[in-house]
Image (cartoon, rainbow, N blue to C red; front, side, top):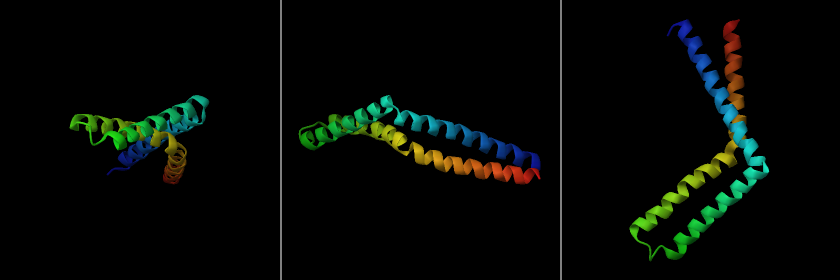
Length: 109
């Protein structure tokens, strides 16, 4: 790989990490806001309600109904995890970005 290609690849990694950092910061800010906290509580309640429905009605549900309820849980858990992990993901990405920038600065010297 040529020196120019390495520089381009490094810059792309930095740009990508910067975008990720901004996303995680926005998610973290949202999760700490009043509206974000409300959303998180609503998502948790939805998950709880769906799990309760599964536990009480699974034996009388059709296969399609069972699959439908299970399929409804997964995206809610994904969103909940995004909110709950935003701060940790921000910190990891920030450290990665700092490392990339340090590496880029050393290569310039």
